[in-house]
Structure formats: structure tokens, C-alpha cells
Length: 245
Length: 245
Image 1 (spheres, helix red, strand yellow):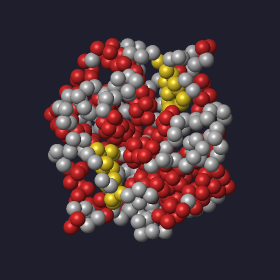
Image 2: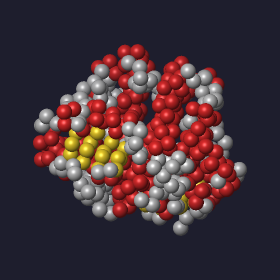
Image 3: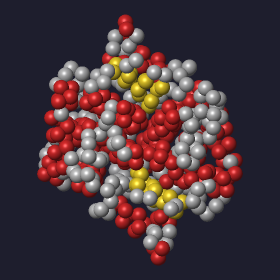
Image 4: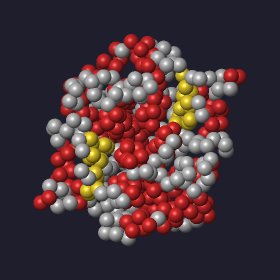
């Protein structure tokens, strides 16, 4: 049976981190919420799993993966589970925990990127929290992006196996997620990231290497890759962007 | 060699989720940042690991665990790694991913609890973001706590092995973390949680069962358990608390 990926239709969001791994590995998967209701798919089919009173361990939110009877929730957890099967996890077991630690740190940045446009309440409209969003976004640009990116650049620099990959000496899902994080930030904050390659040369090179991978390039060029947009965690609101100090 | 837990001295914080598992299992561990500099311990010893230019995979932030040469970062990752060794993870492997998914959802609530007092910038003082904090805290009380807690209550209700534990039919680190989350919220928002037991009877019973466990009771009564305070993620600022609507 194919793997079933459950995530909101119409945006990249957190589901994209899982998608990139599935696409790089070229495994079959079903995008449940994007499918047709006539085939038992669509957003309602996703909500039915979440709201099911019979599901042994229902997920709190998408993305989640259904693999036979097992429902796996939370982006980093899905990747931790899929990684070895997709040959996108370190072979050395201890390094799998290093990979997971990095993936969770990437997830923290994603949450902070989301909160730049929704600092007061995820249930309120952006328009109703624009002033607070500006304060949070500028703090993110001036303090948080440099702190996180300097750290990730240092991880590459200190990787004992060289600075081509985040963990070990081969591609893992962490590299794909690192690409996606940078890509999202470049979309949301182009002015802030104008000198990204200058400040973080190893990360910029990693980003470019991932884009050039044949399976990733084919995916990014396909209809399956939804463009960045303002329903996503990474939103381009020009008023929140500014040059980094 | 003993396990070394690295976390800021003087507060429970995210380190407490790891501590509770170590204490329940009664394994030896060293609290590095709380130790004496004359013994090579203390906050500087912790910073030395984080800032080391030689550490193969340095952690971004505490808590992290050092187990021989391996440095494991991120709370949920530490527990995922320790769980089986401490006999605090499900024996069925697939359920370990269920446990990790729940643990990561608990971590999401912890982050949101932190952001109630720091919605604009973690680097700004609370006093400089009090108005925004009030908006975010009240949204957390009215919308987010009920959403998360209804979900966790439902996980207990739908657990095929019964509603005594979050996952499977035996205690796991997720139950200990669930206790800590509820305990932190009860401290921070006593008015909001006044009818917690009425709304979430299974979670309240779980909280009480964990407190009554001999090793946990002994720990909570010891000097090793630092009291809740306003350096922690769970802070009691009366002006942020209110009765839930």
C-alpha cells in the first residue's frame, strides 16, 4: 500500500518538508487532501481521520502520515520514521539522533517564521495584528535569523565528515529541510536575506546543491510543487521585511 | 559514565521533562550547570560545550544530554533516545512514534505557553511587551488550552489499552511530560484552569497518579526540584491570567 501524506491543500507549509524527502527518494505516495472526494480523498477525508472517534491515536494536526494502520504525526517524527526507509537518514544510529535534533531546531525556526505574521493569535487575521507582527518580524530579522543561521553554518563547518552535508557524509532529509527553510525565508524576507550567501556561504552552497539534484529539480518544476503563497508559514508581506542591521 | 544533563540552573524549564524521566527511572545523572566550577561543572562548562569549535555536532540550546561522546539536543529527541533504556517507552516499536508525536505536541504547547509572556521577542523584557502578552495569553486561555487539552483528553479516551496512560498499557515518558505540562499551566494560569478536573477528568486523574508515584513524589519533595518561578516557560503573572470563557 502507498504511503498516505495528509496535509492542507493549497500551500507548502510543514507538509513540504516531508514531500521533499518523498520526492528525492521517488517513492509513491498519495496526497490525500489534494485528491478527489469521488475517490475517497480530499480535505474531508483528512478531517475524518483527525476527528475519528475510533482512531487509536488520532493526530492533533497535519501533516501526518498513514502507513498501513500506523498514523505518525509531527513533521520531524515523520521524517525520523521515514528517513532510514528512504535512505535519507544517517547509517550510523547515533547520528540519527543528531539529525533529529537538527530537524527539530529547523522546526523551531519554522514556528518562529510563522509567528512573525501571527504573534498575538493564530486565530486572528494578520490584518488585526500588523503592528505586533512588525515588531516580531524585525526582531526575527535582526536577532533570530542570524542566531539560527550562524548556528547551522557552524554545524556545516564543524561536521567531521566535511561541509557538504548537515550530518555525516551523505545526503539526509535534514539537508532537504535546510534547503526548504532557506527557500521559505528567501521568499518571505528577500531584503533581509539579500546578503545571505555572503554571510552563510556553506548554507547557500547547500541550498544550491539541493536545487540541482535531479529528483528535486524535477519536483520543483512539477505541478506538485505549489508556489509560495500567503497561506503558508512563509509569507511575503513587504511591510514586515527590511534589511538586516 | 553517568549521563550528563545540560540545562540552565535556577529553573525547571524544558529540562524538567527530561529530569522527570531520569528521576522516575532512578538512574544516575549529573546536572552539569548546577555543579561546582571547581569540579569542572557549572554554567560555564555548559557554555563550553555549546560554543566549542571542536564539537562534531554542537547543540543550539539546552537542554541537551551528553552520553559518552554523543550529544543529543532537543527535549523530545532526548526522551526518544532515553525512553527505551529507562523502560519508559512503549515496547512496541510503532508506538514509539506515537509517543514521539505526542511529546512533540506537548512541546508545541510549551512553546505557546512561553510566548504568552514573550509574544513579540524573546530578547525583550516582559515589561516591554505586557499589552501584547495580555492579548496572546487570553487567546491561549480561551482557544489554545481548550484545543490542546480536549485533544489530549481524547487521546486518553481513545487509547485502545485504556485511559490510564497516554500510549499503550504502561507508563511512558509522555505521561510524565503530560503531568509536567498540566502542573506548569496550573501554576501559571490558576484562574483559567480552575475547572480543569471537571473539563478534563482523565487528564486530571493522570496528573494525580503521576504525583503519587513513589520516585516522582520523592523527587518533587527533594531539593533537586526547583520551584516554579518567573524565569521559566510557565510564569505566573496575575495580569495574564483570567477565567476561561
